[in-house]
Image (cartoon, rainbow, N blue to C red; front, side):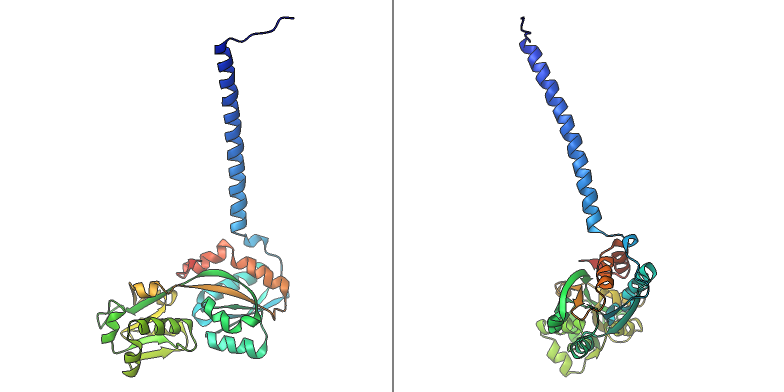
Amino acid sequence: MKKMKLCRGGVKAALSALASAALVCGLLVGCSSQSANQASSEQQSSLSISRMASLEGQQLDIYCGAGMTAPFTDIADLFTEETGCVMNVTYANAAQIQTQIQTTNDGDMFIAGSKEEIKPIEEHVSKSIDLVKHIPVLAVPSSNPKHMSSIADLADAQVVIVGDPESTPIGKIAKKVLGDAGLWDSLMGAGVITTTTTAPQIGTALANGEGDAGIVWKENAAADGITILDSPELAAQVKVIPCAALNSVANEKAASTFEDFLQTDEVLDIWASYGYERA
């Protein structure tokens, strides 16, 4: 039997052809795998509201910080539209909500202004998920009567509007930032600081030309008649808005569906339309 022989050049050519074929196959498999992984990742990163289950005849009882009334009203309305679930939402400041949860041991979820607002009721919370960033800003009426440009300039203000530091997250931030700047005690002592029970009240006052400046959430300053100033001190105080599931949840199916809903692109886009950023 004769054995076939390949010349050295023929062997190289054959090996080269095999290597090229393997490379092409590898690239095709790699691209296919990459596309599949990317598609899977995209599906996992954002659920679609079209996958929400029908919840006709069911309801959820939710607490939400008053500063988030506008975006959360849109979110709650959309959830009802998509699922039929009735949304009973209580809007109030953090201290009022914490007291109600502690005294009644009732409700399904708490949309808090920051993670810190969950700590006083953590024994009532089973889990929480991060939603969006809560960004505090230094704002002034557009006329800027006292020519404010920084936190330090508040030393010359006659009226500075902030949230109540005992009951609101934005008030706690204002007290810390002004305290770190050595201004809180002097401004309080001089009667310069005016407090409100909710963040939207600060934005409304500034838009109406009241006060010289205020410390407020970014979304509450997104109105005509208000100018936001750069403030590194406040940029360092950005918080995250969580959704805290309460131990007293009465409808696990509706609550779970709503948690999924809160993580969809449609809902995150609603937050973004009001000036919030994804956490």
